[in-house]
Image (spheres, rainbow, N blue to C red):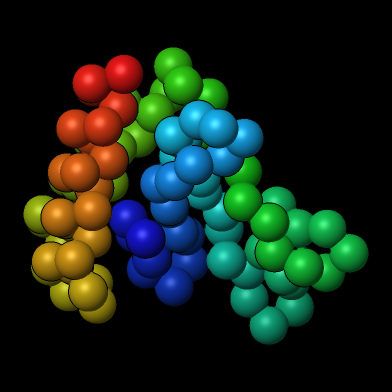
Length: 88
């Protein structure tokens, strides 16, 4: 997990044989979030041309808003994802 503030989440991992960034809006009591299918949450794979910018923004958010639970873990994971992305 790279980021989870209760509203939005981001993950880095292998999807269909490629490392990629997945994101989602977590929803609320009335909505399962976006994207979703038949009431179940899904992840959206961000396009590669947006990945670097999103990873940098996640890192910036984590560094300026330290109140997010598990922020140290998320910072480590985001730096590792950014390193892996730049080495592609």
